[in-house]
Image (cartoon, rainbow, N blue to C red):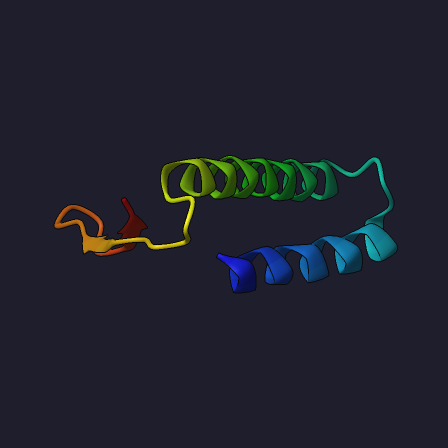
Length: 70
């Protein structure tokens, strides 16, 4: 997730320099970054509440082949 977010931020920066703040693509990438950051904050606070000592269990979901914290 972190790498994906970093790549989007670099892309947003390049697009912003090239096309300006009002371009539709620049705004779309910024909305995606904001959504990812908000989702990461929610997941982080939820996992801290659920696992106060930091112990987390990773499980593999068959539907999307991604690791999920449970």
